[in-house]
Image 1 (cartoon, rainbow, N blue to C red):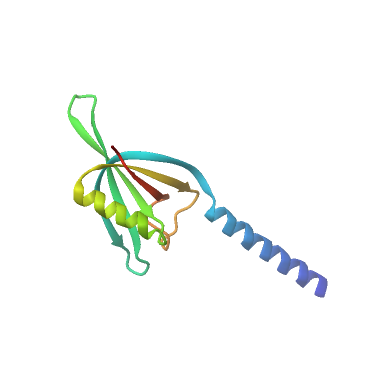
Image 2 (tube, rainbow, N blue to C red):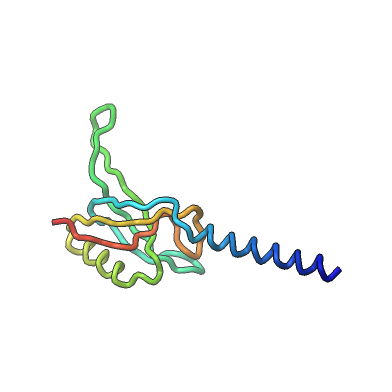
Length: 123
């Protein structure tokens, strides 16, 4: 009986470790460039940093202009990123946002699967 309990405990521990590795692993990384629209803290219980980036205008099939907005989250420990994003909103300058796309989205981490970790001002 002891042997079964130990094996069961090890299986549960291994499953938990695998789950935490999976949710913290990134699916892809890249960057997007555009003009910052907004940055805000959102959430009822868990306050997360959320932003919107205007990627620019494009034309639909009928020839009418349309804007493309990209929603993203900011890692909670990225104070320098938040400062640069706030500055970009105030100045209206174009920025290049480096992000990681996570496998899963959890409400305590952010509203999106895209997490910005670096901000570079465009020249």
